[in-house]
Image (cartoon, rainbow, N blue to C red):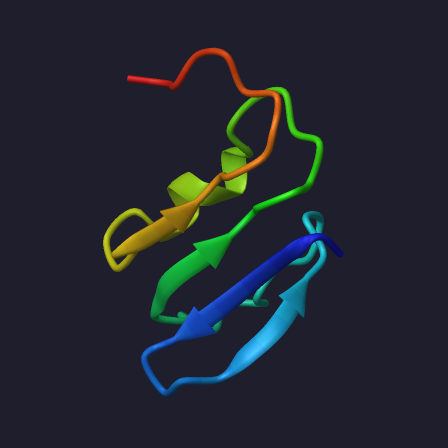
Length: 67
């Protein structure tokens, strides 16, 4: 919905926060949550922590980052 993701294959698409990959392992390198009116970092971010290289959280209302 608000999230844009980029994989190593340079595919750009929209990811609905509740969507699962049904066992397919995606290599997500970029997540863009800019301008999403978020108050906290989405938990989905941690699903890609092994391959994530860039995370954009610009223009949100996040006051504290998780450890």
